Image (cartoon, rainbow, N blue to C red; front, top):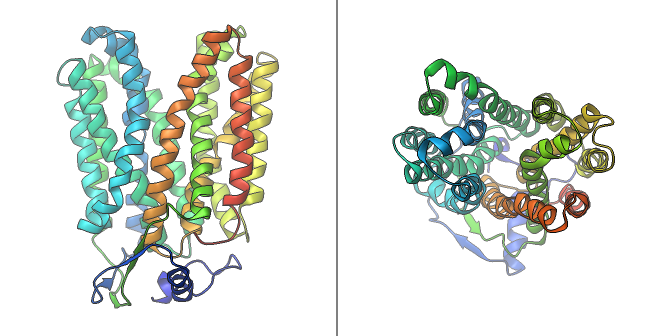
Length: 424
């Protein structure tokens, strides 16, 4: 292993990777060894690759948020019922969880550069397919698009780890900021595109231009690889028996559940408190937009620290304060509660970053990314359903908000442990 591909050395805990993996093997962990003659390669960390990472990340949410912003028009136009709309909104999180498991296999089969490029191509095809016909085609096309997103979700952190081993925090910040910006723009711009282009089909299809552009830029940025170096046999192991890996997965799942609840239900809390729909939508937009500057600023600073537990705890406590405000006095200071909730949701950037920082090799990063995101998004998908069910069953928001606060406390604990400086 070259110095370029060693894990970060500024966190004060990095041991020699060969010694770590050798110890794991002697401890009886599940390890499979690839062909002994295999050579280790990584994409070259060029400015063009950074641009490719950013534009690819910007495409990982508009497929979802653009549809959500015109969902009622789509449902009426294709003659579908509310059950279909509910199923459609559940597809992304479930697909992220299921399809994400296959991403490391695709990485091993064709390489990470081709795998991410294929993900962008599949995303583009899904965006075009879903506007061609009725309810089944909309649902199927969204499923295809989200399968491409799932692969990107898992493998882009692997690119960050391998191509930018000494700038994990900075590039993770670029990635998460672009992801947040893409989601916000998708939601905000699609209604205007619907008016300008004459309908929801053209408005939704227009986002395929962005993903096609990402495919082109990625193809250019991922052409160059770092110098090949002959290395020892590549060890591939399961992380499902790793305690630290489960802590990272639980942290990812708790923050995902809270995020899905906020995106699905926060406007309703404000409307119930007396705000109009426009004001409620603006509060949700503020919550989302905070992720852009926070995603750029927080991960680089947190990555340079010996541990990330303090940062995770601080942001989670901000989220708890915002949730308490939403519950107890939503109309008293809606802007403040939105800002605090938005700060709490920036733990997503740290959840992505610890996947890279808690792993010694890009292969382990791919395995942990698949595990944490697949299980985490499935956990997150249950959040809006449980929140809504408790509200319907009790006739108030109390039980629903207690659920959110309980999950946030779980996020505080799991994030504290996941932020500790140790390898999975």
